[in-house]
Length: 179
Image (tube, rainbow, N blue to C red; front, top):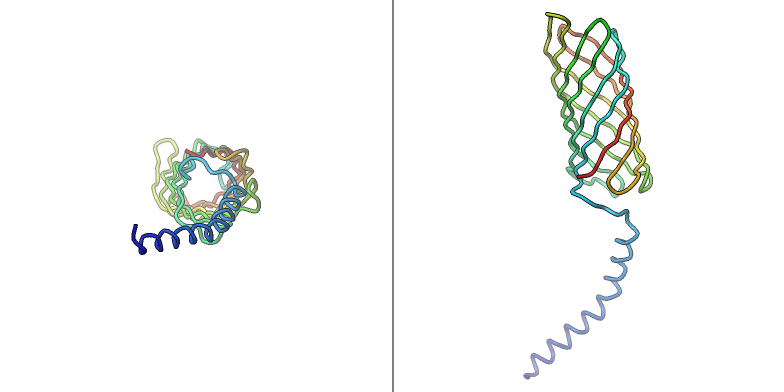
C-alpha cells in the first residue's frame, strides 16, 4: 500500500468520525417528524349545504397534489375539484374548479387551509341551461387521524358569472385519503 492510499484512508476515517454526530442529529430530527406514507397526493370527498338564491346539497370530490413547501409548516398545493349541487326549484349545478391551496400545520395532527380557484360551471333547470365561469374562495380545518386519513370541515363562497348569476355559500364535511 502506498503512502497516498494510507493518507486517503485515514482522511476518510476522520471525516466519517466527524460526520457521525451530524448524521445522528439529522436522524433524530427525522424520527420526531410526523410519519409520512404514500405519495403526498390526497383524494377526498365531501358533502354538505349550498345556499344562495336557491339552496340544497353539494357533493364534491377533490384531488390534491403538492407543488412546493414554502416554509416548514406551510405548503402550496394544486387542487382539482368536481362538484354537483342539487338545489331548490330543480336547479342543478355541475362545477369543475382547479384551485391553489395553502395548507398550514398547527401541529402534526391539526391544520387549516385556504383555497382560491377559478373554473367552469354548468347549471340547468328543466330545459333551460347556462354555462359560465365560477370562483371558489374557501377556508377549512382538518384533523389528521393517521398518516393517510384526514377529516375536515370547509366554508366556501362561490360567485357564478353568466345567466346563472348567483353567489352561493357552502358548508362541507368530509374525509381525504393519501394515496
